[in-house]
Length: 252
Image 1 (cartoon, one colour):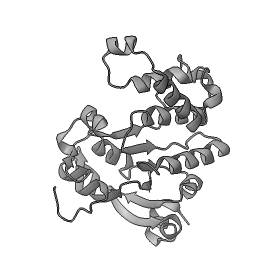
Image 2 (cartoon, one colour):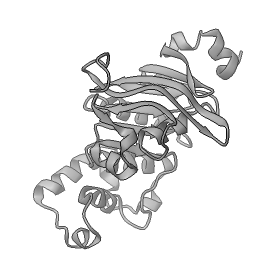
Image 3 (tube, helix red, strand yellow):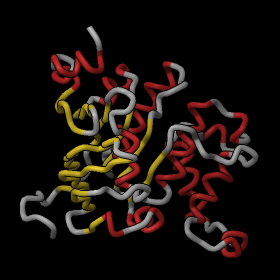
Image 4 (tube, helix red, strand yellow):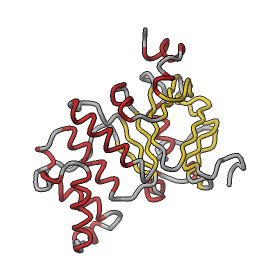
């Protein structure tokens, strides 16, 4: 246990985190506490430190100072990206990384194969239980009717859902999602908000987003970053009334 003040229901704890690149402080004394089963939206202007924050949580970037703990007692600064993924922190980047020459089902099957060696993945055979799980996941991510469609032939929004499904098959306890609504139709945007709200019933989710309608649809606590630290935090309607937030991000 790093600090007796970390509440028992905390799954992600950042305290006093800073990191500089060539003298520029990308993250500056950042402190965020995420609870088990919490859905949190992170907003802020470009350059506010949102992506760097996710890089630090997932081990891509090491902070210069500060605490980064998972489940209260796992110091993430002492683990690399592969370790952190295996510990139970999944990350979805803004651009979907599905394999477009494989079907929706085959992409899900690859994700279920998980951390096997290439040879083990080649000889991996689905059990009936595995097949049921893939069926359930395809339906869960609104792609039950597209299981045999090439991932390259589904819409951008559907590719985002597919990648979320692939991550969920790896059973992360925390899911980090980067700008999922970018490039989506209105219908896809609201379906994605529904999906992420449902995902948060069984795990913790952080969503970095610019689309305020999407953030509103998430109906969750919002953290506003500015110049690498927390500028404001609370429900969206409260944050939107914050004079500092209006000044630096939302505009008048």
